[in-house]
Image (cartoon, rainbow, N blue to C red; front, side, top):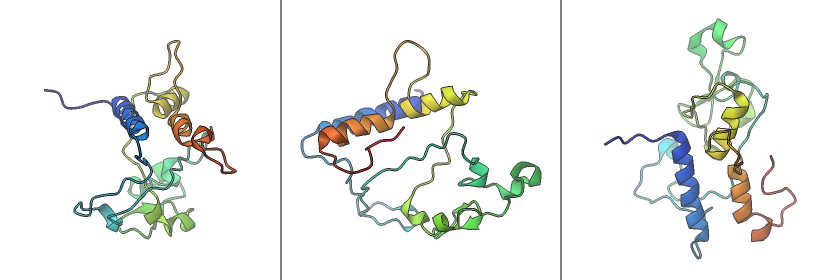
Length: 167
């Protein structure tokens, strides 16, 4: 039995699961506590509850090597002048030297360094990562932010000054 599934399938199943939780009566998706018996990485509080998610999608932003995924051992040809990552307030996590204020708050965010896809075109890959679907075809699918906005946004009583999702 083949137990591997694609990243797209993981995102699709996650969205279905999250939708089910949202539709379940009295189930706040944003406060799913971690069981106290579970071991948590890097000293994360066992009863942590997420209040919001901020996904930063930087079109044309700095490269991962200069920000959250430095590789100083790769050499100057690969890293360029930014080859001295700085430690964060979480043991074992290093980030780019230009982010000292973020380094002081690393216990308050997650860095996902394991995502990959097989698409070489940036626009096509971005669509796939944001929607969980391959680009092309006649159907256009909403991004994860649009789905969350539907269930937690203006129609669900959101009254903040910043829109529930910005694209």
